[in-house]
Length: 124
Image (cartoon, rainbow, N blue to C red; front, side, top):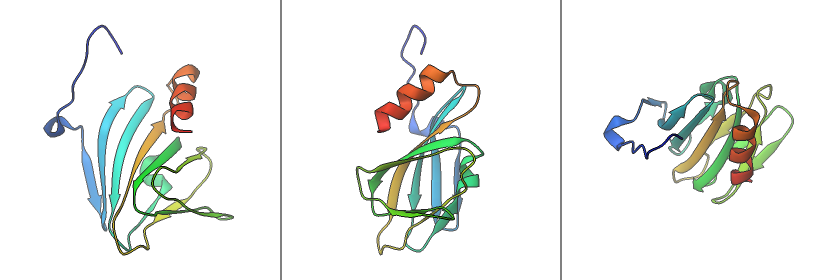
């Protein structure tokens, strides 16, 4: 992390996207690692390609999003987390009447193995 603290103010956020009831904000963006906050309105859906072709760990903060692959489906609740490898395509939907909020840690290839493992263990 370097020798000093780096505080990122909300107005300094690298970027945010809003598309079809899904608001995604970048909280942290570093070499090999990105942390996103995603808020989904009721009835909205997003696809894994919106996170890039990378391994991702998602941690549910609020609501009950549904994570679906071609073979399986998982309804998550606040406090639950799920990890996907980069080759797995999936969708996330919010069929609940309230919004869903989750944090995503995106592991990009240039991150060293120890950084990736430490972050995955933190979410497990």
